[in-house]
Image 1 (cartoon, rainbow over the protein chains, first blue to last red):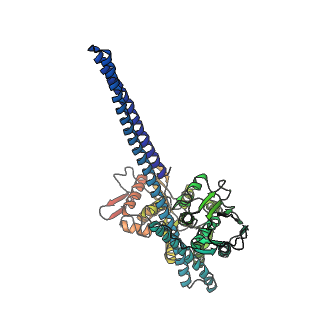
Image 2 (cartoon, rainbow over the protein chains, first blue to last red):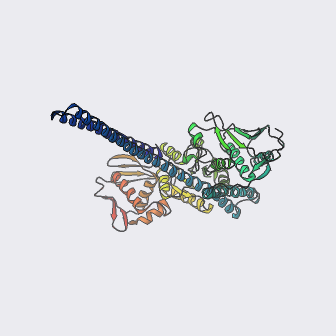
Image 3 (cartoon, each protein chain N blue to C red):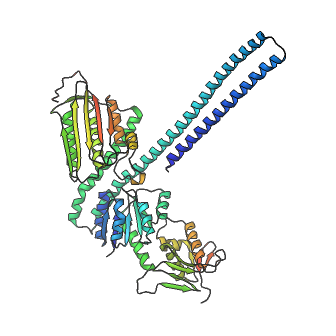
Amino acid sequence: MSKLMLTAKKAFWLFICITVILLAQAVWWIALMAKLFNEKVDMVQKFGADKAYIDLIHQEEISRQIMIGLEGIFFLLLVGAGAWLIYRTLVKNEELQFAQQNFLMSVTHELKTPLASMKIYLDTLKSNKIPEEKKLTIIPRLKDDVNRLEKLVENILEAGRFEKSGYELHKDYFDLAAMIKTDLEKLITFNHNQKLEIITENIPDKFIFYGDRFALSRAFEAIIENSLKYNDKDKIIVKVYFKSDKKHIFISICDNGIGLSKKDLELVFDRFYRVGEVLNISKPGSGLGLFLCKEIMKAHKGNIKVESDGIGFGVNFKIQLKVIKNHENNSLS
Amino acid sequence: MKTILLVEDDPNVADGLVINLEADGYQVLHVDDGNNVLNEFEKGNFDLVLMDIMLPGTDGLTLTKEIRKTGSIIPIIFITARDQTDQKVEGLLAGGDDYITKPFDVSELLARIQGIFRRQAWLNPGETTENEYEFDGRSINFTTYTAKGPGGEVHLTRKECMVMKYLIERTGKVVSRDQLLDAVWGYHTYPTNRTIDNFILRLRKIFEVDPKQSVYIETIRGVGYRFTKKNN
């Protein structure tokens, strides 16, 4: 059982204990009040008071006990809510710590792996034992490593900037359809080693959109890269579907990858979240890509969600963006 | 030619290592998925394993434990980005012989591999050489890594065998803890002197009638240890 689950379990049982104690106190307290009430009425009757006086005492005592009862219930609810808040905070805090540890571990791995590769390649270039033609094959691979590092550093800096001041968009009118096509071409070029088929459906020739081209392109690339990363098929298939109406644009990106479990579906957009156990996370990434995606969509007043029929059934990312009206839109869709 | 099983999921790191290891005269088989390692390990006759820890499928620590469970004493060197002391200790306790953190110099890795092969050759010089040592009804076999003491026959780890061999080769002479570290581990980052004491404790339990009243492996206070035979 993970440390996170243990802490959550402990916090839960602590909350249950506090609740049981509170309920036991409430029962005991009500029983005590009822006993006092009966004793007082008995005492007044014993001293031979007349019925009117006994009724008056009776009424007074009932009002007093209702007041005390309500105050008691309020107090109990207050303490109960406090205990619940403490429980939630404990669990949240533990989740955050776990995510940060995960992030640190992932980033350490992600930073050190390309560094290790670069160091090995540089040593190789220096070595007299390695034939020159072999050395020539190393240069593009060294560039791959630099690109990997660059991407990781960009993601971390971006997440840091977001933390400080929210996602700042630099909006302008641009051709969203062209952006999607360019990004897809770029991905095909970069992933020429993989057997990759990208199917596009309904993408118009031109679609002018008001937004941050750079941010949206980054989000779009992150989603497709995710589809490439988490895919164990010999042939990777990514399908991009575009649809728009007067108010919204809908983009769906689905793949034939390894899919997501129900638990991962809920957490995949969380900051630092990585799918899989820490020691098995070998796919490059920092747990920030999809988190930034969600924030970019939110900043555009849009949203993103992910669907999957489970492990082995691929995923379907669904993006919805709001169309800004005050501009001529040459949509052909 | 020595054969190395390289378990590494990053294609560039693996590519660079294969180029250098082959240039240094080793034959290399590269596996990039933790789930295929045990299968390849069983099929091949390897002399050493270079093992990454964070892997897709089964992780390197679990794989090492699985390999050790089969009774294999093949040297395993971890090559990993995990650089905290407790992570290194975890790796060595899982059955690793050495631990090198990324990024590293290729020359350092090659030197460590050579060091392991050199120590292995010293411990086990070859089938033709008599590789069993007997003393006072006890014995230790440096080929099968077995020992016989008052409590019967037990299996030893390679490190335990090496500690014993180093002491036996210097019978009657005092050996410092640093000398043992140099000879058996070949470097000083791990373990500590305290770990040597634990190895000695285990060896005493095997060879001594009363480990607290040690006869064969004496502690020389402030210096180290001395192996002596009772009946020459």
